[in-house]
Image (cartoon, rainbow, N blue to C red):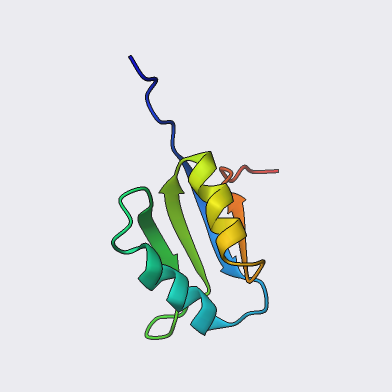
Length: 82
């Protein structure tokens, strides 16, 4: 029996503050069953500057390679009080 796929959340931002690159990424994952858009973060009425996605580590790595370093894709870590 195959082992279940483990997913995690990832923060995605444009490397050069280019909202069109991030918008293109969001459009490209809308029909991808391996990636789920969890949240968009940005000014009300404006384009998002950050998105949160949920996927498995292998897909996240493939997305990093596919975007040719135009996007920063990092594991989402819980916030803590310091």
